[in-house]
Length: 110
Length: 114
Image 1 (cartoon, rainbow over the protein chains, first blue to last red):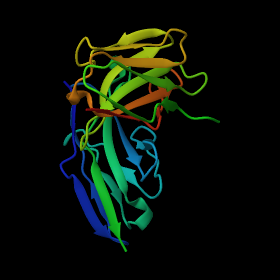
Image 2: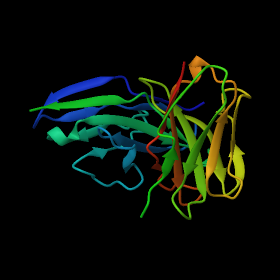
Image 3: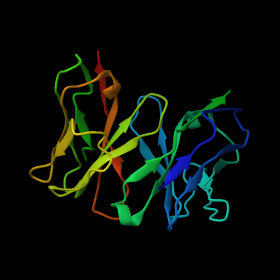
Image 4: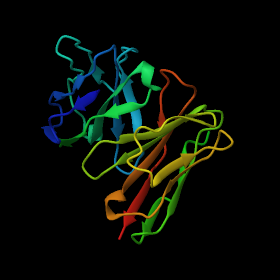
């Protein structure tokens, strides 16, 4: 069975500090990993996915198959980054339904 | 263009009543997904459709839950004989096709069973 773990429920940093939101997964095949974000009073939306290897809003995430991790990083946090972040996994042979982690609330203090 | 819409946005019902939650996907999107999110947790998969065909309903918790998408567009998730443990945010998402496409989420329906 596939599983996604986000060990931190809450991460609080000061503006300008580096941010790393942790995500670990278990899956026997070749997964696709995503980060979704939900800003206050907005709907859940895709932030980035590992196959695109893009940097979105300054965030990057590298898939480490050896450590089964997909941590989300940003060198300098901004107040507008405050949101709920969900790591998710999709398996191609399961209709691309998403398995989500429990989420991490990022608070960026001024 | 219009995104995924869901109605109602909030629903309060008494235990034992049936509820129907509606999802209107982005026009032309083939795949439609339902997720449930309990407070403090991530969304959990319930079921999904390609066009009008229900492809996977393995996430539906029991036979009180059912879903349909009769014309391959709007979908309805029905919960019969609601229980307090059914209280959650119900999220719908659609994607362009079956495959590694982005899922676009609706605003969700907050269901409270009293």
